[in-house]
Image 1: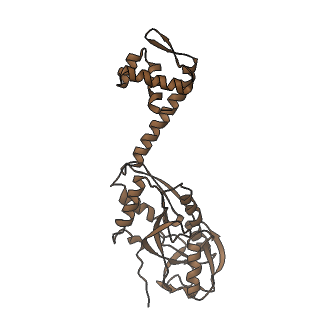
Image 2: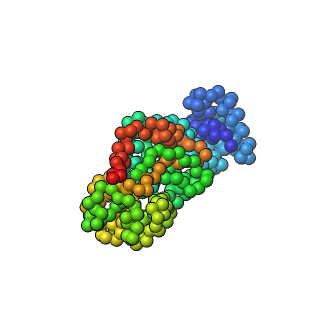
Image 3: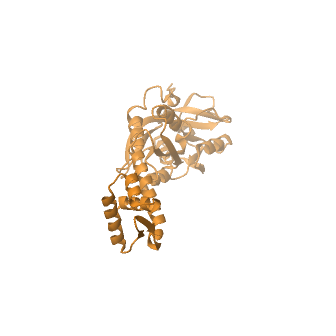
Amino acid sequence: MDVDELRWFIRVAESRTVTEAAETLHVSQPALSRGLGRLERELGAPLFDRIGRVLRLNANGSALLEAARRAVSAVDGARRTIGELADPDRGTVNLAFLNTMGPLVVPHLMSAYRPRRPQVQFRLRQGGTERIQQYLLDGVVDMLLISTPTRPEIIWQPLLTEPLVLVVPSSHRLAGRSSVRLAEVRDEPFVMFARGFGLRPTTERLCQEAGFTPRIECEGEDGATLRGLIGAGCGVGLLGPGPAPVPGIVELAVSAPACFRTIGLAWCDRFMPAAADAFRSFALAEAKPPGMWRPFTLALDTE
């Protein structure tokens, strides 16, 4: 069923005569009459009672009118949405990120990008590695901020390297040091992210490089919670640097092995709205000047 014919039908139904409707629609009266005729033939029923030059909706036309209005409104809404999808200055960027990216990385990216395209909106989701990867694969989000993905169908490019720090209680025997070797806590209980979070395998790998298997005392899904558990004396942990000092804990640089993770942007090979594509291009090409990631700069004391 032709959308223009539905639009014409609505206009005729709302007008007093075909002539008036044709003038409003900027089409000729014969063309409008032919369009209505095609619509009636397709439906197999007349839609109007013709009384002289006046068309009056009959029961068939009344049954079609509200459905036609809904259909035309839906098509017009879709056209507006498609227009927004093609406009990098409007629309929405659907971004998911690791919980640990929330305090620093995401605010830095958004504060750098929003002055360039202030009308673009961001819809944010967060969670562990497995959860946000599924968001991407299900089409819920356009892209991810994530350490190396575990699914082969996800495209990933690095953005920055984040050092990891050893977090210990402020009463810990190493708390007064500026840096430590990871092997120095080989006999300590560890507080770690649960399985499904990217820092879990990273921590396990780094402990193996240091010559031991960590003894896990507590698991969690949120960096602030893990810091609280460490401050309560439940163990030590490898985490990204916190955005601000937290009472009860100390963050120490690790001199050996090199403790860091690489954070990148990830997406799938499918259509991406222009607003999201523009943000992706910005993040990959322009979001890495030296000063931007200064909160992650951590000089290691190797003495």
